[in-house]
Length: 225
Image (tube, rainbow, N blue to C red; front, side):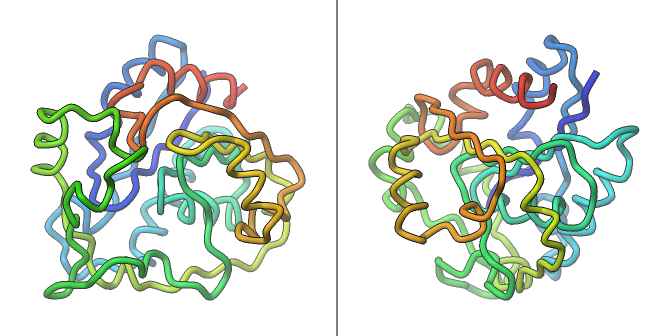
């Protein structure tokens, strides 16, 4: 059995991984969704450091070096884990780690001390094309505004050994060719330094843990071997 740490992106609670955890269990692995402070626990004063601590505590609770999975903005949380702990692999789903000194997620407005889910018009196109109206309504109702201290927190990286960690970038709403273009253009500086980077296509939108949990679990399973 391999431990696979699962970190959801902005606005998401650990429940977003339920179907993936079920599939990973079927495949003989243990999925460990991280309860991120400020995303479902009512802690509106949570900071990025609090979320990093929660991720590291989950990693530290594993018997062996786990696979660490970061979805969307949480790609940076997964990358911080690789910077600070021995991990077997980092898997990124539809997101890219930001560089040292950058803000975690400063790309949407802060309202009353938090970054609320902006609604589906902000994600029209490939991001949400595979979400039917019922699924959109269900997801939106469960989205938690991300505390300002998380969204605007500063990412800190300091251990160049992270570049030796194998990385898998799962490409859902974009293609591996898109990612190669961004790498060549210098838009993904942290991933450009990774010594072992695999690009994997997944035909889905931005939330494959909801729309493609079986396919996603299958991709995470060999990544953990």
